[in-house]
Length: 431
Image 1: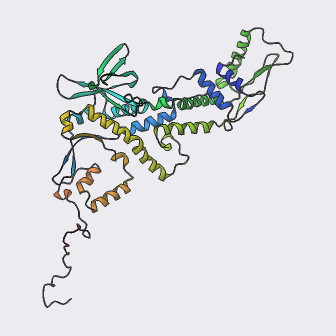
Image 2: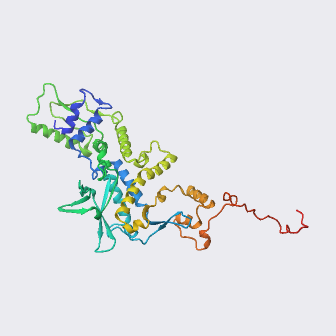
Image 3: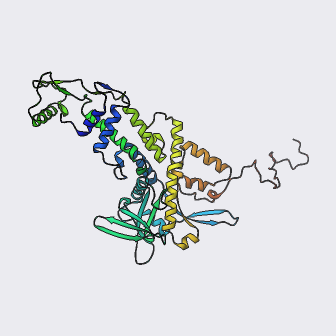
């Protein structure tokens, strides 16, 4: 029979004379054989074929797309407390708002987050004029960037390979961001570290699509009748298999077919997906891959153990344990690559505002802000700023409340005025 090589290999591994194959046999062997026979190695470019990786990268990229980034100047007020002033007109603030001529800030951050999540690193060429600040940040696909470090000077250079063109840049001309790196300067790709787990999920996806595209019909096995002769030539055998597949393939399944003399159907090779743990394999791979990025299960579609309360908690954990570390990598790299020495010396810093993604539901958020307002931690205008509203036009917007039943330790106690009808000062008055 002219069966595909991977299937012949898988069938050779199965026990003889078994019509039903159970856990640990058919599914894993068929998937493994299919992987060995035709699925290409997983790379950061091809990993998006995995539904779980696609969900992870999309969640990270979209979270960065809605997270604002600001340039601040840190200082100290007259009482010695640290202050922070937003600088919307700073050259770097304008650069981050309009990174280049073909990308909006949303496009830029989605691509940057996608690359660092898949490759573990992100690069952008710093385009300048003859003089003045950086004018554009031009993203460079990490697939085409090679890093080299001089063993004597420790200087890092970046080689950009784009088609037939190759250009080498000094570190000062490239904005480079990376995650953890085992070699200390490149950045490790999570995809490379768990590529076998991703490949198995892709193989299971392909196997399921192939299996159900065939109507989940068991594999047909033909045998020669007793005392029957084989086909006269290999060409006749190939033609018989081709005619059979053409007659019953695609939408022609379940039709009747007359077999030639001497050929009979044997017992079909049935694969029970439930007993072969097909769904369990898919679920397990989804959990393993999500764990490699630290992403909670509900973000990759696993709601088996999800409740309203723990999903809300897991969403906060996703921001704290996944988004915030990536954000700090970007912040540190931007302060190193985009700010001048004068900026750094004057207290300029770059920060993502993660409050927008860490917010609780509206009611809980307002209750928390009300507690701060009543205890004098924030004023009305600061409350309004957190909610994206303009400040009040009257002077009371900058006034802080002071609870009447509280006082500073050691300060003299001021008694409130006596409540009455105004006659208490009269010596003849009797309450």
